[in-house]
Image (tube, rainbow, N blue to C red; front, side, top):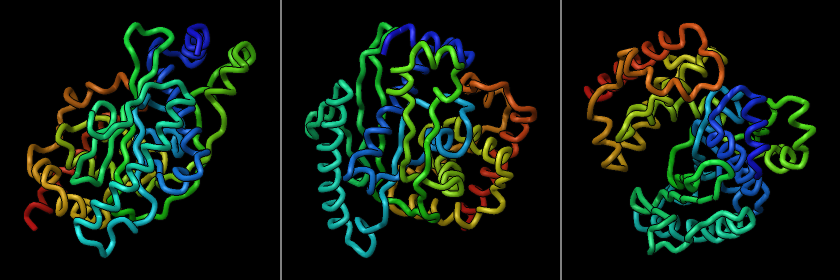
Length: 307
């Protein structure tokens, strides 16, 4: 990717964050490779904030990592803990093989050895794996890194859908598209991928906000944008939020401990810190919606703790 392409794309969409524009384009190309892989495309289910902005909502913020669930529950349903861990490890090794090939094709640095713990990290008693894939940026002096996380054991309440993913390059002007025709094709090709529906993302975002070791303001931003775009209210999903949350806290101690810790911030000054992620004009009353969402989630936390 050449620096002129990054600069022109940034100018076209109205941002000077060249590093995030480049990372977003590389993420899209990485997703295209995963979607075209015969093994991964049937097993990995795209989820999280990057899925939300690419599959459900037009780009309103940058996202710098990619998250996946696992299709079906065959790895853990009606199985012992040892059997589940064994099944997950076998699948993780297969995914590592495929990601090693993809990283090579994209000229990304990736150490596939489990024992070195350089770029492959297994956690949650062997049911989650995190990859770090490295690239040499065209503008930034420091190397770039994309984090990819796969959760092989989770409760999925709404059936995944194969969806078209938008690209940040969809927003560039005709001049940029003409001048950088080859780069636009390379980094902005249409991608279809098995993905969480918006209902599942809302439920999972609520769970994440309440169980992260370190709260991320972007979770609340995403929930507020879902409410604005689709009129989706947490009140309508309280039962499923509790069901999915209990699935997690009953299995993993670190999430249980985080759930029982401090409440989510309700102070607008505290919630202001991640607003630089937005690449659109701030919607009216966004902060008001965010405060109300965190108050509601804190209320849910208190009610569940009493149970």
